[in-house]
Length: 234
Image (cartoon, rainbow, N blue to C red; front, side, top):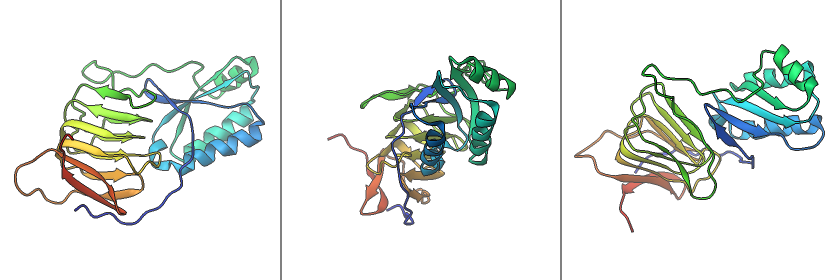
């Protein structure tokens, strides 16, 4: 059994969309002085999921000045979240964003050293998932609001953060966080489950030393603990 210290957190509902190498947040209608703290509260409640993320903010025709955008950018930086771009039809908002050095359109994903695109982040509804058909190397990170399926290995130093389940058709050696938005019914499955760190919801564990040959395993939360068992199809 994997050992999991008791940790509790509160989740909240926040609609996200993965785009390129960032997360798109569409700001709802309403008073900015109400929407702003609500957005920050939602990020605080999912700090692990958002930490290191690049946000693209869609504010439609809302008119925001440099002080408002700059204040939000500073608050996000304190949470290790980058405000990468502002999308708006308001000339004043676009001008303020440009003066702050923000992009005014969705940034293109960067290319890796081998000329391939870095792992992208999408949003898919229901039980659909983003499919990564490659091995994730050290330093690479996949962050996705839904499920993540990796056809390859997740090497030490790589990281997968998913709002839903994580399935690795290979060796899972890096850091994995399933149910990062608070869903403790999520599972992590791998052909060889020996992650550097495994998290499901608010529960954390490290893998014990491997004994015997690797086998497909599934990790999930049971009675407040993280457990791993043979991964079998029902």
